[in-house]
Image (cartoon, rainbow, N blue to C red; front, side, top):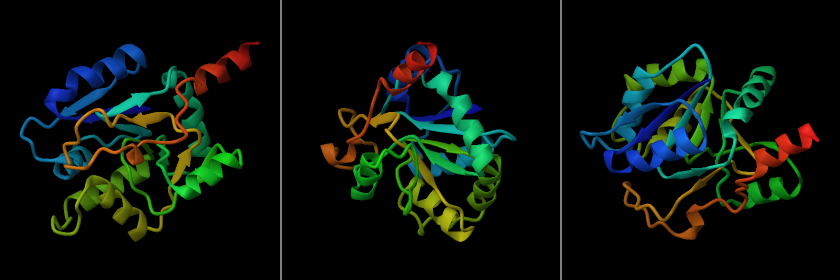
Length: 204
């Protein structure tokens, strides 16, 4: 699985440390030096970074669960077996998400997809997004996640999410999109130690 990080230059040092040093994940960094904005830089990435393997897309305002690198092969295998084309590792603050979490679900449907903090894309979906990026109407979308939601709806592709959330939206970092970074934009079910506990139980 490839990992690609979408970031702005002033956040590069932070997200590099989070991804490379804390999570031990080797990543490709797409830095928006020209300040194109989240949507245009994502569309550029969709065309430049498409692979014949699964791709983890990360944004630069996140905290990542410990040992994520060791868990990614299991997620990739699960997605292949279940023919899942999009799996969000960020579980937003929604009523349905909380209900699914309280029911003990680990992989759950994620209707009305939004939030691009951390998502795994299949090779097929990467190709579709690359094709759509060439013909998109700039007036149609107000964010990168709305572009992804458009693609999912157009091609009737279902999205899923992981519970608990494996990344947290760090609202202490000022949004480049002009969002009011309230606590409502954080996940209520983030578990930084989830994978560590899984690995410990496996080894006991």
